[in-house]
Length: 280
Ligand SMILES: CCCC/C=C/CC(=O)SCCNC(=O)CCNC(=O)[C@H](O)C(C)(C)COP(=O)(O)OP(=O)(O)OC[C@H]1O[C@@H](n2cnc3c(N)ncnc32)[C@H](O)[C@@H]1OP(=O)(O)O
Image 1: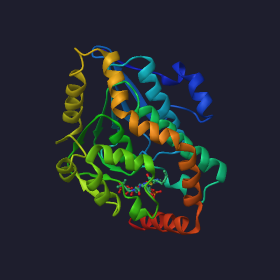
Image 2: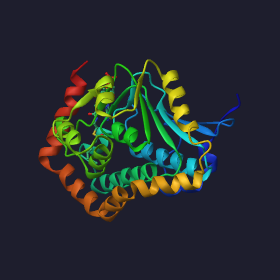
Image 3: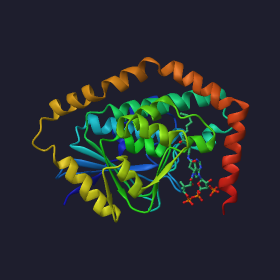
Image 4: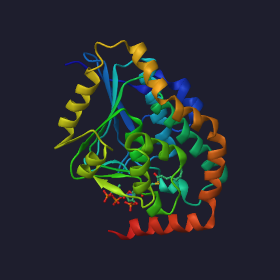
């Protein structure tokens, strides 16, 4: 089979520069299978694929690349065998500089809009723990297959930060209002089997390669379907959620900055970071 690893930086220099001056595509790789037209985006920011400013920029560029090059599908997975993503980089949220946190959250919104609203068929192979922002990333895809023995969910309630509107919207759209409420208000992390039971993921498998096969199977299901009609239908199906969040995005981001910067939330974040340090 012919595989080609794309040097994303070359092809998206203009785009990337307009997003960030960070060195780009160091935190993930995008590999196109030229036979199937399906690309795999492998997250590779050790140790836990935490979503720093730079990570989000690269993710945005990769999603844009998949649209621009009209990939037949995009599979998002992790190079780590234990963590899909630990979510937002807690260091970005703890004692933030006011301009940086504003830009950081705006970038998070941008990436989410791009991925959630992209016409490219998307699938997540969740081959490790997938927490908060990591769960958002998986839920923004159309199809999720999860390797067993890991945890997935949005733990904000346990971290002491509010669940932001786009996280809520995504969770609601996948598992419904009541299940979302029950999970989000206590920061529940689901095992792979529990996630399957509640519809948070579509399949549970024994390993990553099996997961990739399942994801390819899902994406191959669109081979006979008009890409244009499919892309438009997806947008129509998701437009209500997107429209509402686009309309209020600036209001949401400013409110979140205010909340995150508050003394109580900063104290909770500090305690959470301390707990993680001490667990060793
Ligand atoms: C819209 C804005 C509103 C706020 C929204 C926030 C949403 C979020 O996404 S907040 C982030 C929530 N995520 C977490 O709480 C995840 C915490 N991490 C874990 O539970 C575990 O690390 C893990 C289950 C993902 C993996 O466990 P494992 O035993 O393999 O690794 P660790 O030893 O715990 O971690 C290794 C290393 O990584 C650091 N780290 C872990 N998570 C994060 C993170 N989210 N951001 C930054 N750094 C993280 C951890 O401290 C360790 O660092 P050291 O090796 O230096 O001690």
